[in-house]
Image (cartoon, rainbow, N blue to C red; front, side, top):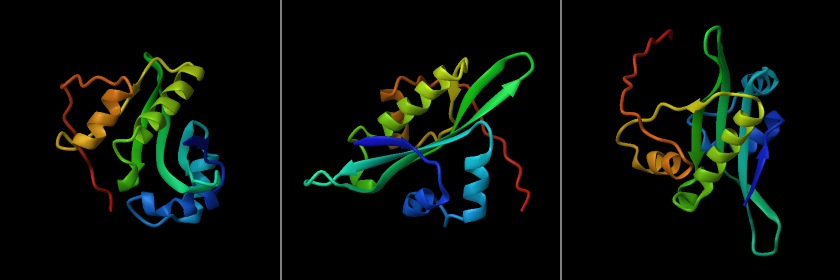
Length: 142
């Protein structure tokens, strides 16, 4: 497996099946150009050593607060079904965590549905701990 930072909208378009919705090129370009926005793609190798299409991604956003400093918000993790529970999610989370450390973030956090056992397993295997104290409150602006 190889983890690479995404730098172009075309790379994200090639991984579109991993996302919840179709990739919008203008949004992809905006995300990639925005300071503090990060996205890594995981690639698996074919038997002949050639790289196949992406099999997973993780995105993160640096958040800064005047009294806390900078932390990494793990925005989304997606891994293709055949590659789940094989270390792909863990490797992606670890890549984002390493970047956060490199950038001087004091920590990293993610929101996850309590019933999403696959995601919880990936986060825990990458060193994350469930503090059990969060509730999610949302606003829908659409």
